[in-house]
Amino acid sequence: MPVMSGAAAKKATYADLLAAPEGKVAELLDGELIVSPRPAGRHSVAASALLGQLWPSFSLAKAGPSGWVILMEPEVHFGEKRRVLVPDLAGWRSSRLSDVGDLTYFTMVPNWICEILSPSTQRFDRVQKLAIYSDAGVDHVWLVDPKARTLEVLERRDKLWTIAATHADQEKVRGVPFETLEIDLSALWGPAP
Image 1 (cartoon, rainbow, N blue to C red):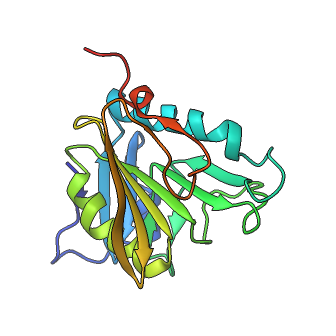
Image 2 (image 1 turned 90 degrees about the vertical axis):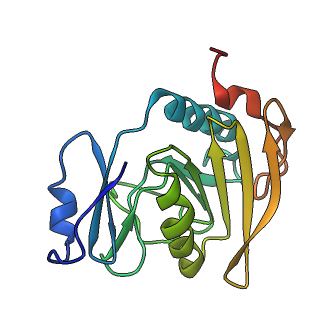
């Protein structure tokens, strides 16, 4: 479960985020330091499998409008350093972000974000993070739940999230903004127990 600094405690800073224990995911939300455990195996399989399916068609290696920069666990600063989040996957159209160079964090808002839901972070991902993503102007969010074996595709319309589609189990799906590619959800769940 994510650990948050107490409301009565001093406001956390970016320096506090940088001093978080190694091996943890640290995020900053309006002065609260949120420290979560590293993702479990099921979570990592889902993120890796999804990236593996997107990369051949949408990586920077593809010229033209299909080019994307898709990164695993990038640190993204939304506004000032009071909102620093680490989505599981984030994507920018290459027309907006063509070179990541030596950047250690990003200030440009992604076009697409994917959160892999875990029991310990699900509430934070669905409530606080979705609100920040909407306010910042992220166009699309995917919520992948490896335990429930579901994918929710969300689109931002007038600063509100609408569910564009929901998918489950072994479906092959075409979700915005990657609707030109058929994604095999069964790969996200890993081998059956």
